[in-house]
Length: 120
Image 1 (spheres, rainbow, N blue to C red):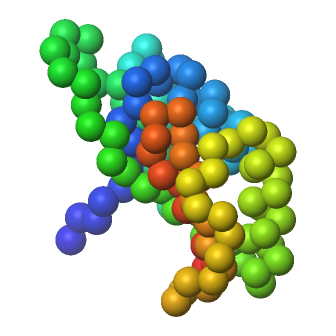
Image 2: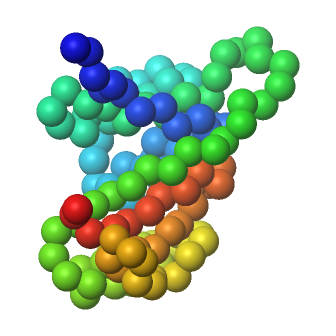
């Protein structure tokens, strides 16, 4: 049975967003075009940034959330938060304890959410 292998985040400016994600996650793009850029997540999975079609009349809604699961305890989550704040990311939700463990949420330049949480 086929399984999903690409996660698309809609962005306004794919190259600018690719720089943001590249810096945030310390990874390089696998495929680059003017409006569509992918990153290899391993295991045959990709993260894609797409600004939509060139002749698009309306902006594409930006409503996604990417999650980075980190191994370790709450201190690892807090360390990543401090690191990203030092990089100047927009904080949406400060670190706090949720039912699944320590977590926080930041936003990319388009307002897409990026959550950091412990490995399940």
